[in-house]
Amino acid sequence: MGNTVGPWLGGTTISAGLGFSSVAWVSVALGALALAALTFALRLHRRDTTPQLVTA
Image 1 (cartoon, rainbow, N blue to C red):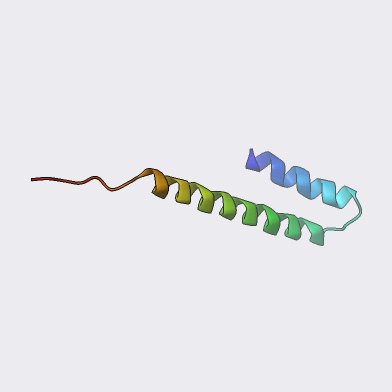
Image 2 (cartoon, rainbow, N blue to C red):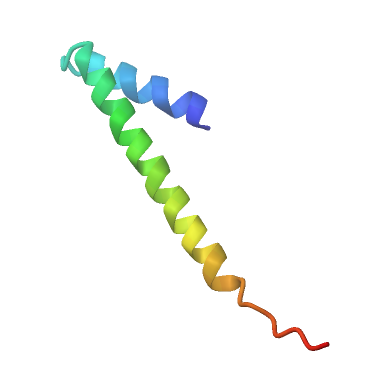
C-alpha cells in the first residue's frame, strides 16, 4: 500500500501547484507516520508480553 500512496500523494501535491520540492515534504510526513505507527505497535507488543514467573 505504501508503494501506491507515496507516489499518489506526491503527484497530488505537484498537481496542486506546490512544486517538485513538495514531494520531499510528503516523504518526510509519510516517514514520520511510519515511525509513529512502528512506535505504537512496539509499545502494544511490550504491553501484551508480560513476564512469566518460572519455577524450578
